[in-house]
Image 1 (cartoon, rainbow, N blue to C red):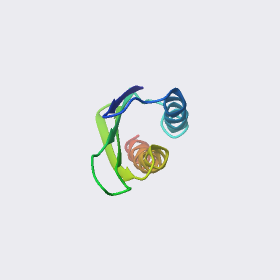
Image 2: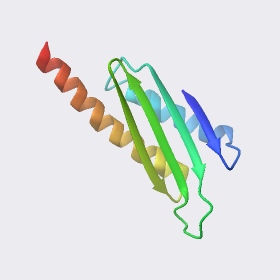
Image 3: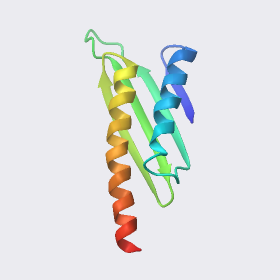
Image 4: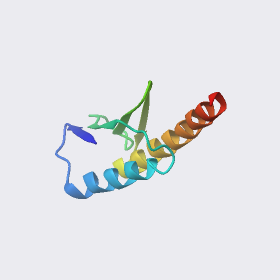
Amino acid sequence: MNLQSVNFSVDQKLVNFTQNKLDKLENHFNRIIHADVFLKVQKTSSKENKITEILLSVPGDEFIIKKINKTFEEGVDECVSSLERQLKKRKEKLKARA
């Protein structure tokens, strides 16, 4: 996992949380090449100013998920849930071809 934070410095607790969530994706699809995680704080008056973006690479494809939330933990949770659904669909397609 490659994690980049924009407009703030990330603490180790958030890095570990993100890594643990991404590790669980391997239960659904064991051929993940790598994940790029971008955490950004938008300068805005809105409370929902935390942008979480995850780019997940698998053989022959890439998935990009972007969520805006009040906390990065919520964003990571939502991104990982979306990625789980997409990886399950991809796995189904691969099984159908085999």
